Length: 270
Image 1 (cartoon, rainbow, N blue to C red):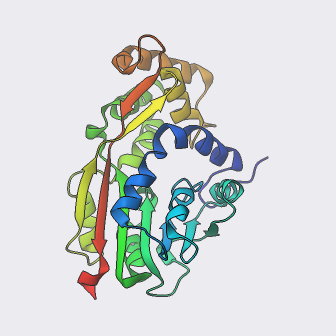
Image 2: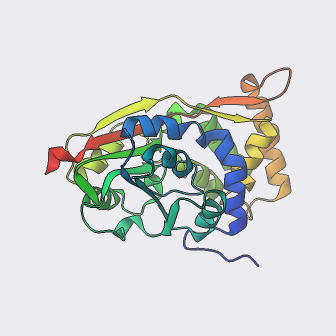
Image 3: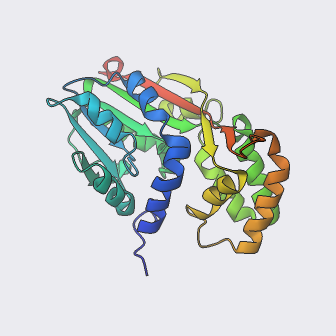
């Protein structure tokens, strides 16, 4: 039996995340976040919630030989995949609620689609601010709310009807901080009253609607909790509801998956 780590994930779940989710939806975001953060040669960068290292393995190209990049995650399963793919990056196990670094340690701190999983997001922001140098920059990306991601909203509704409320809630969880004003509220609670928050359009692309649904349900936290009949029902309903997002010739799916990115310079607060 596979070992379940601190995040409730197995090595198989982490491998599935890298194989299916990364190319479908995450590969597009590192260049945007790197540009917003202004990462350049010599920077010391911390990514909090690095997952399998999709951001880190792109960002390490920008810090140069004089810089340093650390990817930190609570999940040892995710870190195992990250270390295998990109051994030249320092990947470390740690908790955003109590970062294992001294004050003023990094030029740039990035959080890519992690903050929604922190038990107390405002404390997580405080910790990221603490380890940031006085003139450093913090960049935090989360998914926009479900109302701005209509296919995912629809999938949650189908999951509620065909599986149960728990499955629907699990699919909705990553979008929890995308409501208008929610990030501002979190930063304000953390003692930050000036933060730039912008919306960014993104896409999620899969080979087929069946691949999309199966990936979302079976390649992540719901992997062992949904039976084949329930999955088939969700696939059937999705094919009917989301047909307009399919290429009629190939069946490939291209759906909106939009994000919100917050950024600030710590100089304002020192």
